[in-house]
Length: 142
Image (cartoon, rainbow, N blue to C red; front, side, top):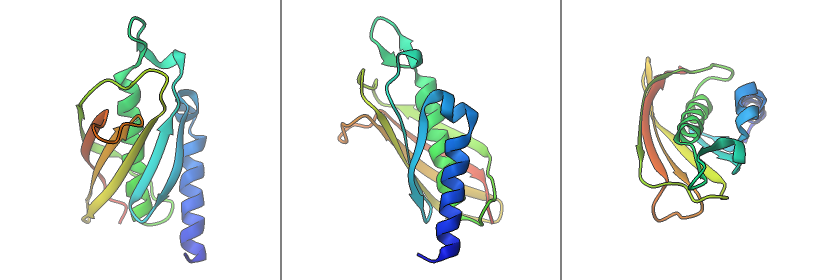
């Protein structure tokens, strides 16, 4: 990997990991590059949506998927160019298991002059049935 791409990757990882909201939620960008991104959120009692089932709130999964999609778009475009969500559809396929880390993997699969298209999944260790899947459109980084 050339130095420019490596520096871009480090800048994007730092950008996402330093965002106050991501820090508060415990969301981390763990890997990215060439239109791909992977982010995690650890199980945290402060993020529970239902005290009876102890399941992480669906908004946490939404936030994780949205952030992972944005990171995938940024890794596919020009260095230091932010993006914004235009549209994001999330299908919740099942509840995340209590006490499990949730991992989102996103792929920016097409970029036009104005729109970047992304798809993603969120898993909690069970790769057969994701917790949720997402597809969306983001402002283009080119």
